[in-house]
Image (cartoon, rainbow, N blue to C red):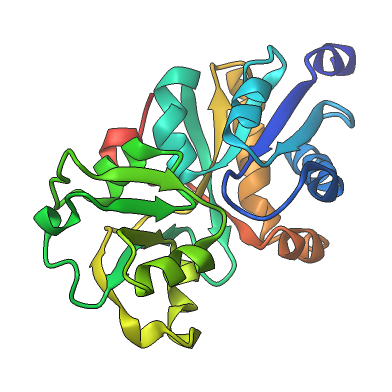
Length: 257
């Protein structure tokens, strides 16, 4: 049996476009996570590998590999690529200071945006800008965005907020952690929160194209759900800004590919 499991070794791909972190810096942490997850699931040592890529194209390339059976990605990435990659959520991340769900907030120069029509001709800048379906379908469920709105990705949120405060034709879509830091900025009085999203998952660990058998998946799910409660994993989870994992509760539009 051990030989059979070893022959079915699979890879967990971590991808977080728009957020700090390079492959070399993150690799030791994702390696440790893979070892801990496999052990918690009762999988043999070496049966789960992990790779990290900080870019959307790099993550997609990794996930196209036949051994890429699992993906740990932000929810915007999941929304954008679930159908293409046949992703099915296994668990949700329970994130330090946020929890398993968060609200996204659109921030604009004070007085500039009064409703969806006011966004005409502006650019929505966000770490999630690589996922326009997420922005339009998940964040702005209550707003019909004008066709003239552009959506742009950035890893430089502070610079984007400065541009908005200075009156440039941009508005900034912030995740919950970024929103919490807004009041501390010296130019915060020039900005205002315009609209918030519903509560949405922060990140998802998903199965790729059913490349793992049902029995192994059930064992992995149980192992992941136990990580935040079992002794010995606190330091590892903290290094990845995690408290643990919870069962997935996705909006109906993304519950299945």
